[in-house]
Image 1 (tube, rainbow, N blue to C red):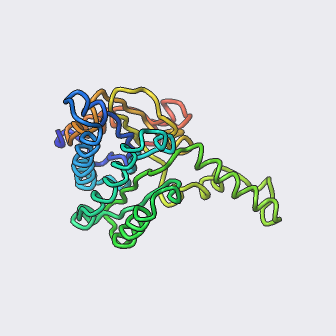
Image 2 (cartoon, rainbow, N blue to C red):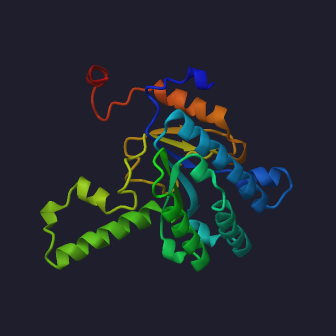
Image 3 (spheres, helix red, strand yellow):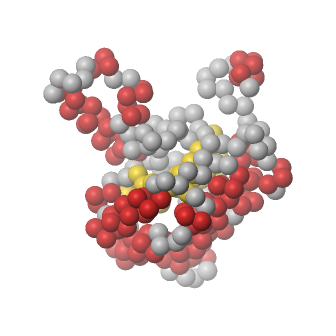
Length: 245
C-alpha cells in the first residue's frame, strides 16, 4: 500500500499510543509480558517504515505515570524489556536518533543509565528522531512546566505577561521537536489517555481496533492515507485552508 501514499504529504511527526499488548497476550492464553515482547517487534517494524517513507519524528507512548500502579511483576518485566530492546542496533542501522521524555528519575538507575547511553550513542543520527514517552503523563509535564515558569516569576527573571504559548512549549519535555501532525491509537480504545495534551491540539486523530503487536506497515499506510484525505484547517475556513495548500 506504500504506492498509494502521497509522498509529498507525509506527516512530519507521528505520535502513537501503543495499546493492546496485554489483551493480545490474553487472547493467546499467554502472560502480559508476552504481549509486551511482541510489541517490541512492532516498534522495530514501524520505526523502520517511518524512516523509509520520510517521517521525521516518531513518538511512542511506552509507559505512563499511571502504569506505575500496575502489578509489580508486570512493571519489572516492562523495565527489563526497555533494557533489552535498547540493545537493538535499529537506531544505528536506520540513522535514527533516540530521545526519551517523561519523569525519568522514577525509573530504576540501570534503566536511566541505558537510556542516556543510547541517547548519547545516537545523537549524531539525523534521518529521523524516535522518542519514547516513559514514565510520562501530559498533566505531569504541564505541571512541571508551570512550576518552572512560576519560579522564574518568583525570582524576578520573568514577568507574568511574558508567558505565552511559545514560552510554555519551550518548557515542555517536547521542546526539541514539532507538535504531532498525526496521533494513532491502536487497540480499539477511543481516548488520548493523558498523552501530549498540549501538543496534539491540532493533530489529526486516528483510532484502530488492531492490537499493537499486530500493527504493521500496511496498517501504518492506511492511517497516513486517511490523514492525507483530510483538510487541516487550524481554525480557518475550508476556502482559506484550500488557498494555502
